[in-house]
Image (cartoon, rainbow, N blue to C red; front, side, top):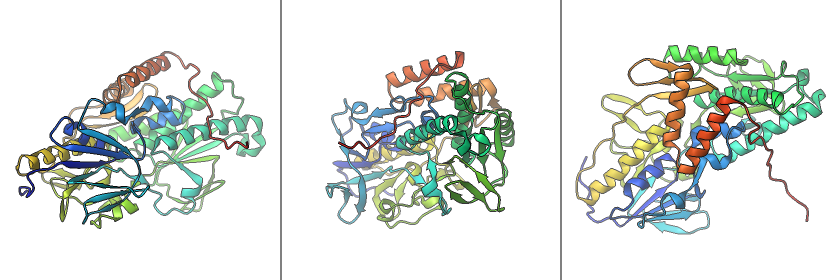
Length: 428
């Protein structure tokens, strides 16, 4: 890496208040730079727990935290609430949806990704994604409304009961499918929702030959067996060719009727904002970056988190997976490179420190795959999963609320936030 030509940097703009953007901003807090963090939401979302919001295990406020509160004691950090639509690389400006422009000396793009429907007809119109807090809230409303409808109008459903189809058996899909089964069980036993639980189905579709593709075979087998033991219908090598109002059609020609389709098949970075950079792309539309995470031809722009094809470092040519630890580490690395440039020093290549991956199947069932050592599964894996998520959750209040909620649910299944709070237009 070469040394920077500029020795004085005054304005750093960070786009996105996700894991990567927060990590960058935190490492620049109280440093001799002026930081502006821009996001269309005024809160940070803890995405790994969105599925619990979607299945009424947690409230939306439990997994979100105000950005201004996070950086309230950092005098050099300013928050700008707005949606970035374009980046003018020549003028070194970002353009917001309200036409405002913000100038930068250095830019960190941590804008994340969006749901990838892979061009499947009907998927954007008829499937519900799970990537944002709004998605989770919408899913919760839809699931609970579906259960209510199944009680009041069973004749509208195949076999008199609802079928929920989850597309994609990565961590999000596996966790969503397991939580859906638990929610249905609680609704019937505790809330006395009168539906035919024997005919109520949760179907998990995966296009490859295994669930949790990034995990080792031992973890995959455990996850599959645990899901099936909880009555989740795991369908492997099942490729969706179309999503309709009545369900999904597979490439084999089979049609699976569904009351609701949850899309957890992946994400993409293809967007007008990413397009405005004119940079080369890797798989999933991720932006190619140099070893120090700066953009080729634009050393004043860093791309981190899900938006970037973050290099693993060392001898591995494969980019890092789109995971929270990658986002956090890459965001922190970008901040350190900015400080190197302030000091007139050379930037350094990024190296990912893989500490393992994990996924939960449900109550007292999870898999934790550490970089070294045995795969933790069952209660041990579940406790490891709980502990790590509490550590990374932003906000003391949120940690306490989530911990109490999980402890209470472990001992019993109380009547939780199973509220239908859909926005309804009102005629005045």
